[in-house]
Amino acid sequence: MACLILLDDGLTGIIAKDDDAKSMADAIISLIENQALSSSIINNAKMKVATYDEANVYRKWEEAINSL
Image: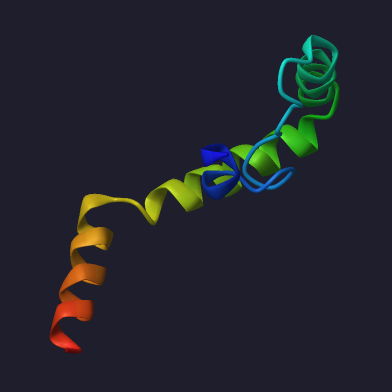
């Protein structure tokens, strides 16, 4: 599942069970009711997304090529 590569359940998102509306609803409710969890996930996700920033990706490719 591709989302498991991009998301860390409970850290950068909440992964609901496939084809399970109750699981999705429970995840949404937990974010609404737990502001600390919601804020934490938002901040962690922003940091993770920054690692995929064009400049960071370019730098990593350059480092990899230069190490050959």
